[in-house]
Image (cartoon, rainbow, N blue to C red; front, side, top):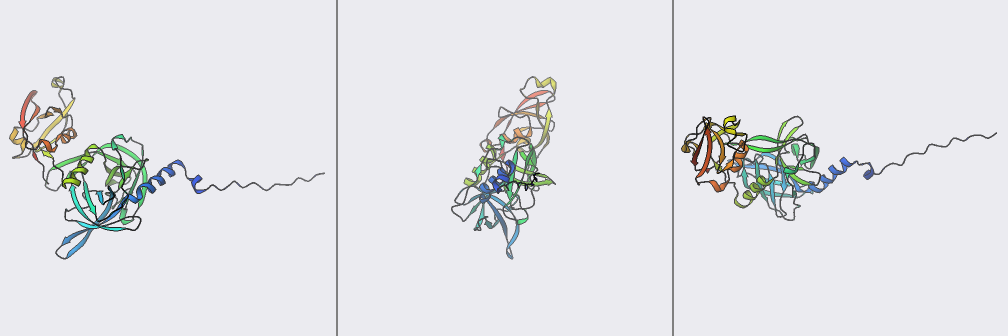
Amino acid sequence: MTTATREDPVEPPVPSDDEALDAYSRIVTGVAERVGASVANLRVMRQTRRGRLPSGGGSAVVLTPDGYLLTSAHVVSRRSSTGRASLVDGREFDFSVVGADRFSDLAILRADARDLTAAELGDAERLRVGQLVVAIGNPNGFAGSVTAGVVSALGRSLPAGTRGGHRRVIDNVIQTDAALNPGSSGGALVNSRGEVVGVNTAVAGIGLGLAVPINAATRGVIGALMTEGRVRRAYLGIAGGPRPLPPRVRSRFDIDAAVEVVEVLPDSPAARAGLRPEDLIVAVDDKPTASVYDLQRLMVAELIGTAIPITVVRDGRELELSLVPAEMTE
């Protein structure tokens, strides 16, 4: 008679840390390691009669090794703002504001620094809804915080401008469910390749964050702020909204909708050109305007002070007016 012996169960091997990381985690940790060194924590100061006082904080993205930083305009609310920028490696630098553009909510800072790790800018036009994105910033002053989520929606709009000043909408804003909190503004929204595709700008609600996209238009804003300290835009002087073209006139144009003039501001270029409420703007400078965003994109600096044709539909009739855009001021 033989006696069976019970073998001890074989313990499964304990996976290494690298093996335990799934694909999602590897992407997020890889992005954090690659871009974290390029995101700064900002402590903003303002000059008062009692001296320099703290006025808030936020985040910024390193653009160049010699100290140019990109942040949100509302983080540095005044051109005279100064402060300190700190990096995850412990280095700290003084910074000043080179230029801020409230209509895109972007600003450029210059830090007294060298040998910084510049972030790589991507193209938000290639984003897709559901795509993984990583937000890196300094929420509530906690430096180097990383959250991850997906692109919840594209093409959102965000009101911008100054109190009592011109009204404008930042178009094509990115909506994400990556957690954002006070202090995240100015930080980086990054795709899985480690490219900065947006600048975190607003917390719209629980699980809802917004970011200004990095695209051809905002690259132009960034370049203008770096070289000139400001962005010049043409200004018509209307408040408008989208409206479908009436069927009887739609066949004459290549667009199905136009910009309806809701309000004409007194003594504005639009008023001097003879625009009226309820006019439908179908083209500016011979370029179609199917939406307010189309109209805004056409308001480039080259049009300031130049007479341009503007095509409108009024009471079913097509009219050609001449308008001279002025420069938009804050």
